[in-house]
Amino acid sequence: MKITDILRAEHSVFHNLFDHIEATAPRLKTLAEVKSVAVLIDKVMAPHSQTEDELFIDPLEHCFDQIGQKETFHHEHEQIEAMLVKVTKARTLKDAKGLLLAVIAASRKHFEKEERIVFPMAERILKAKTLTELGAEWMNRREAARK
Image (cartoon, rainbow, N blue to C red; front, side):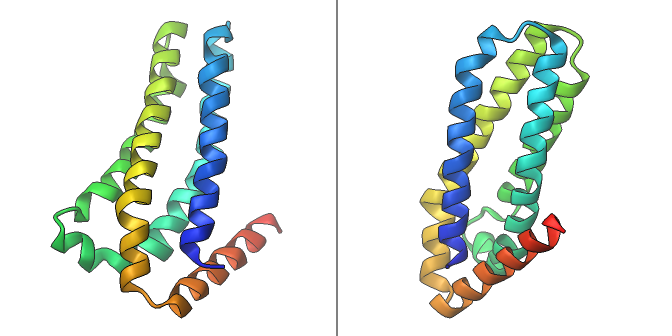
């Protein structure tokens, strides 16, 4: 399976998670509940971001430089991670909910950019064999992480 297909599938799962969080966030009653959701998002998105950066974005670094986006994609991952930290440090329920929803909005925007720009670019530039090998490496990393 190509890495682009795997990453698109992960994005789909994240979008479903985000839909659920957006629907249920108004009913969260405590700061601890909101912080717990932020930790959940971090725990599922951190491996995705790390793998995406290492296996996917890095081999295309020269292409991002050419389209003036070299720093953008790394920065967006870092920005989302920093926003999640802010949720865990929030002192009020209102602030935490607002930050949590901002994380989701930023993540959706980032995913949309990847799906619209990065994945098609990778499929044009990288050989199908390379995309499949990167997909296999993704699978190996996931299996190793489960052990």
